[in-house]
Length: 441
Image 1: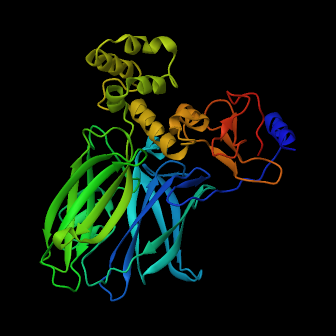
Image 2 (image 1 turned 90 degrees about the horizontal axis):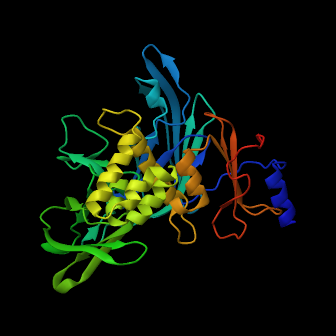
């Protein structure tokens, strides 16, 4: 029956209902909309409660826009629901907003985005959160679900909040803002937790220390960063924090200049007298695969990535380079030759290529292989976001599979990926170029 099912998929004669797979902390795509979600928890000013902050990042790409005067406008609805362990709805927010841009090019931008947050005051405990983004003028939607535990911060000993990964931080302005922390600090979250580029080469994060009820005058904050796959510690520091206020707010930054691309975890421990363990927190972040960085650290992988989008002779000079300096010069020349807007400061294709590599690594890693080395990652890097995804995670007669449709630009292409071994590695089946098949919708 499995072989027969695969044969139908190969022939394109099987119409399957599109389904949606939901995973914690990972943005899922239904239609064309892309949304990132993150969250942190802090002690609330209200007794016996915790403040849950949910951060969201909405990209311009995927909405249907209407031209109004000299602008392009899209309308969306964001719905966030919070359920407790008994599945009771204990928090709900609905927002209807508009995206307004001044050029048609920005309506298709995979880079431009807007960030905001929603906060809830809840009792400590376990919660399930559902976030849904809907295009009010089109069919696109995106949904993310995750569970989280809200810790009780009211203890006799000092406690730590979660880590809030930051995109930027400034002094507080005259007008109140959603991102204000305390009376003199404004922290804009890095919702995707991505760091590490020529202009963003530091890890910036915020956390709070709560003094507790006992008589503690100071604590030691120990910070470690480990490679999340290998477990190797790549950074460690300690500092002493004076507990002279009920809440100690700390904004910290760590240079990423020597960090290789990949996933990392930051571990923060709170230590008392004689190194007594008081509290700890752990969070993951990602150092991006920037070609400018990768060509220095791992030239073999950098060249293999470029081979996904290049003809063989275009890379001859990079491959033939005998020194790191010559390789860097050949690499820079390659991108100069492939700049869609020569003479401008930014190479849009290079930036988009880097973005696709990073998305592939985060979405499509399988069997301990980086996402860009998988079939789905390769097609994503070459073709970009599909115009439609049919996702069937399981059925009685077929292994999990996905069908990616491309039809907005160029000839219609359909790529079918099958998880035949049920190991999360979706393999591309014929036709490998996606051509010569009819739409299945």
